[in-house]
Image 1 (cartoon, one colour):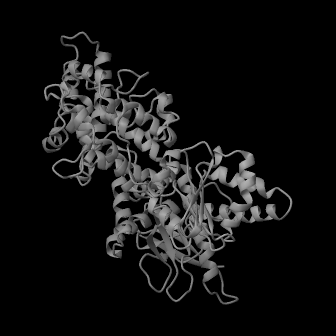
Image 2 (spheres, rainbow, N blue to C red; image 1 turned 30 degrees about the horizontal axis):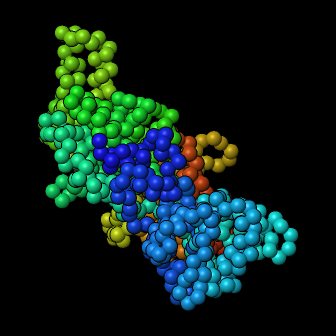
Image 3 (cartoon, one colour; image 1 turned 45 degrees about the vertical axis):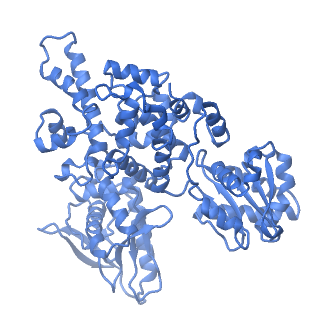
Length: 616
């Protein structure tokens, strides 16, 4: 029995870990006598710069539960005050520590754990420090958004100067959270929202902390379950996530890509849930729903019985080893559930899985990972092809096993196919709801690297074509001009063929034009309408391209009907059109008495948009 495996189980999606947080991490580590799962706090350097600089600045850490607020504070405390490390976490809700130059640092580890009396007595000093009135004192505070705003809102309800100061702070911090700004000129504060940033480096650190834990070798080196004929499923699953010949495992890459898409879709995954994900992939056991994580004993049992279907890491990645209610309680598994990995069909890949044709694609899918590939699928495939022959299973049971086996192999193909697989229909994202997920990620990388307009132009063309088809309801191929068409009068029809402004050129320098840009906070692309260079206006309007909306526009551009998608996408696009038209009419200069021009749109013989102008 490995103490390391028992320790890792405490991080999985089991009842014992429902309340697992930084405060009892040390207790778990001591109980199993293994090294901590330690990584550098993602924003640790920002804390040090703010608190230990020449002029100390207050820091407030906010975010959802499990984002690592307490972890950041503990790491700062133990690394910079090692002589007092034994005091952590301590009984007091507020710690006072000396800084260089006679300054004082006051740490509130968790605002929700501080009594109402302590909060009230600390308010005046905290407010004074935030307003820059006490340069010799600064604060390091952890609180989620609701707790933080409630603290100042309750204080603002009191009569007198203290209530007025709290009201000023409540408004300022509310605006910083709303606009996602970390600094404000009126406050001496760095407000770090740990829920508002995507970082591939953080995901890698979490995975490495588990997969490269220093005690894997000492705990597993002499395990009899490491035999190649019946490999230990825990060690096998670990190998599928580790580098191969110096290259990152595709399985791990695809997980990070899915998490990146989720972040762009406003699905934030806390650090605690990332730990849950990697542990569940390693230890997931579908044979025991009430205890869905492997121990060394159950891993040995599954290997001896050849029951690797129960330890399938690709199924565990989406939480299929868990009961539905427990799976829904862990938001990280919702990321893959939304992708519908396994349920989405693809004729080309299904043919490779079932008929072994085309042979090249079949070999790529089954060439490696024999245990979870041919080892699981060949028996159910052969049974399916021989329905009615000798065997104890009914035809219905054979068909059910084949269907579930095929879904599992689609899932495995999604996690293992190379991103640039040819032909395009054999790419992994074709096995998900976001069939253009790979295009979205390539666009993000291009924008982040400052790619030239030539590289971005193919994306812009597709998006413009998709917008034109949505606005006009016509299968136009026009991608050089954006037509903000609509209807006149009250109607429920979202498409129309009347335009009240001139079309927006895709590449013009002297007219209104369209450009792709990156939102630096959310790290997702925006489609912006830009004014002519002669104007001082920076941006006329912008359409945030979440993965769902991007998928919508790309599919419409490629021939799908706009009405086959959710009404939400229509409404977002229609709002963008109204805002853009209003802004352009406000910026454009019209002489008094000039007639209003309305353009009636029609489709030309080659799919281009033709406009007939009417003066009103």
